[in-house]
Length: 205
Image (cartoon, rainbow, N blue to C red; front, side):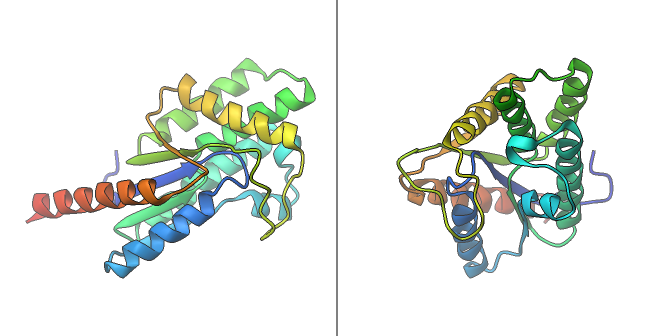
């Protein structure tokens, strides 16, 4: 599937906004680089989508969702060229979950053909993730203030629900990233990554 491109270890996180995805990946990046591991990160595309005029969050459309999915895939594949480990802030199933949440929020139903097309893209690309974490929503933890956030708690709950539903519907294996602390998940991810790197090194020696 990857041809001449050697796939790195890919760890991705997804879940409702302001649930600790970026904070977890920042800690993981720091620990890996401290161990001299070459790391590339793929950023959340929400702000870029908004900057070019695409609707996001409650206003997501099939077109903005397709853009985020395909741009995310392109960014991830580009990152493969530059690192032994790629960390993804918002894996592509996240965009599909947010699209479903936006439709539910607006009381709309998806076009089955559009839904099938998006699901095929998401399902196929998700096989490239070696480890996938879904954050869990704790409504008692306030929204972060490091960037503009959608304050609509109803939509935030819908996003949490529909991201989880996409993972279930597409049978994508994942682990939970609890909101009350990342220490265990951080140790878990580091052990997994180092094992995969060691395995890859053994196979090439």
